[in-house]
Image 1: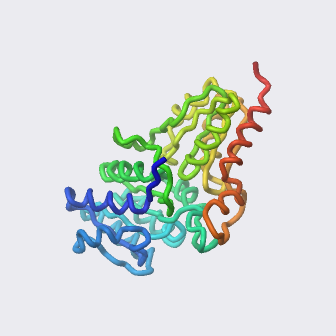
Image 2: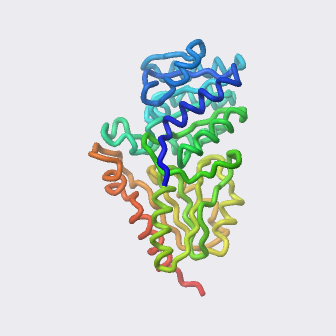
Length: 315
């Protein structure tokens, strides 16, 4: 299967969009070579603003540019984007619904070598709690490119999580990205997995293993963490025997809790969460080592589905 880098896709998408839309500007907090916003700088230096290690100032400046009619994208690591600039996101972007696009790069555990200070396992959950914010979590590089086009058209504040590594491409080339839409990637009648980000890959691998055992699993790419389409969530659970959620984030305030809150009162299916327990990350030699350590491997998804189906007592 094709592998592609999400950060590179982000940089390429900015450059492509910038060519036809002169209102797009990019602000960076001293990490442009990592986030790949430096690609935009090379193409359009007059529309690129290096803010230094000053994430709060960067976010406020972006809000000001939005009020002046620009479409600003800010870039830094996710842990800094959501943590250091929280008050500016809340007051300068979310409250006035400023047309700011905040990009949290190297999200989750994907910056595996730099440890807990640089691994953001709570950024999406934090931003989900802020009114008026849209929160997106792409599964692959192809989806990143489509997503950037969609958020440029959307008027309002958006937060996008970008994984650091090369990931398999599941998103089809045809069609545009729709904010709020859930994308099915496989079919199955026994269980449904609501997966987001890197966990789409893990869920697809688990589903393949389960299919070999005669267990049909529908894998969903939930790349919009907010707003979460309640009707779609319920429709995909209908007729299944079990529900599993999978996310590279802590459980508190994440996708699992959001899906559960939607399904409560509408179905009584066995439910399993694959997510990080109440813990920060740590340094590792490679990404896979961390995903396994924190319960996010394909094997963990596989066992979650088996546990949920084993708890099922229906006909």
